Structure formats: structure tokens, C-alpha cells
Image 1: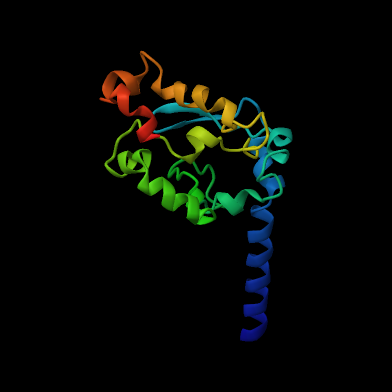
Image 2: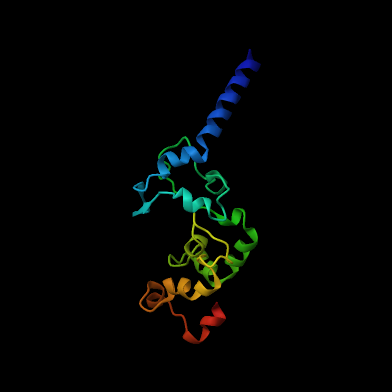
Length: 169
């Protein structure tokens, strides 16, 4: 009897776990263009454009491959928002980030320091060789300029000597 009870509990939880973690289930809410939530006092869109995502470099992944820190049964899961940790899969690049000026600034708690998603995107990441990629070589000045242009919070609140910009980069 104990063995049958164990098997029933195991398979019922296994089925519920898999069912609750599918992309299709995530899209029940996240497919809505008007789906928004307040995260850390800021209203943000939680919509996922499936067409854009499927054409990204991560388009073949399941939501839970990146969003590992969510309990699918604990809805809504905006109560304890956790950013995706790109370093879980991209440890080599994570090491470079930690060693660069942006990573060092983030480690010191600088709220203006960018994360991977701020430059590369989140659900719309294209290969660097794609001319539409946010990090395509010809777009780098525009990408960096989003934060470092004249009048931006970074330019106004941080001392970045003009003669060291390329050296810092």
C-alpha cells in the first residue's frame, strides 16, 4: 500500500510539475500585450512576443531554462522577482563582465551599472553578426550612447574622463 501511495504521489506531482512549467502555460498570461506588473516600484511589461522570441538565439529554449527561480504554482510570481542569471549558461562571458568596469560598478551596488539584458536584450537577442543585433559592431556607438550620451544619468552622475573612454571600453 505504501508503495502504491508513493507512486501515485510521485506521478501526480511529476505531471503537475511538467504541466505547470511548459511555455504554453507561461504564455497563458505572458502572451497578453497588456500584461504588466509593478516590480520594485516600476510598472513593466510582462508580455512576451512569441514571434520575436522564437527568432532570437534563445528561441528554442523553454522559459524555465532561463527563468529558473520561479515556482510555477506560486502565482502571481512577481512577489519575489528574480532577474535571469545569464552566467548560469554563459559562465565564460560572466567572468569577463565581473572583471570589466560595468561588472565592478554593479558589484559596488551602482544602480546605473548595466546588466547583460541592458545591452544584449532579453527575449530578442540576435547573434552579434546579425546587422539587426543590438551589439552588432556598427551599432556599438549607439548602444553605448544610450547610457553615456550627453545629459544622460551616467554622464551627469559619474566622472568618466573623455581621454580614457576607449581605454575603459
